[in-house]
Image (cartoon, rainbow, N blue to C red; front, side, top):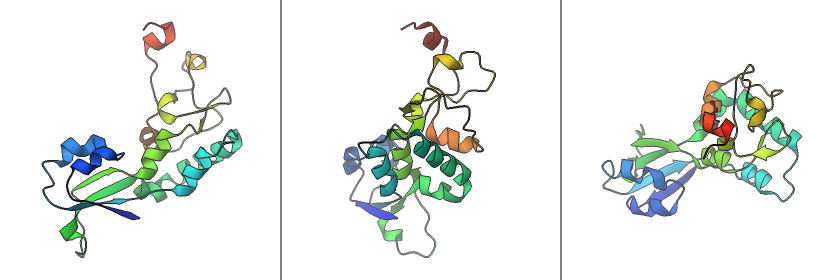
Length: 169
């Protein structure tokens, strides 16, 4: 766990948490800390020059899915008031996505049926009976997910818009 101290919400504009500034402004009027989780090992794996080993990424995906319940706490960072840091009961002001969670979404590491790697936000997770699955990058059907929450965390697309199929801009 990493403590990231901030004097106010303005410095968040230079971080991956810039999207929560508007939410935090009315909640924080003092020093605060973001208690964050990172996974440097994951970042190193997906940032490597030769990161096209589909089997490796399939195994990582299956592992994270299998252990979702056990490691789900690492997907959330806590925003706490600095004065409450040493209190016995720590009540976060807000929960936000951790650096690890954001890293999972940012990198192209999801194996799709064509044998390529995509960002999770560009991959479709479709029912087996969807007739249009072959027209979009979709999660390889040999990979089955046990946790809907994990699929939602990665922000896989779950419906194909007609504009996508017909190529209408």
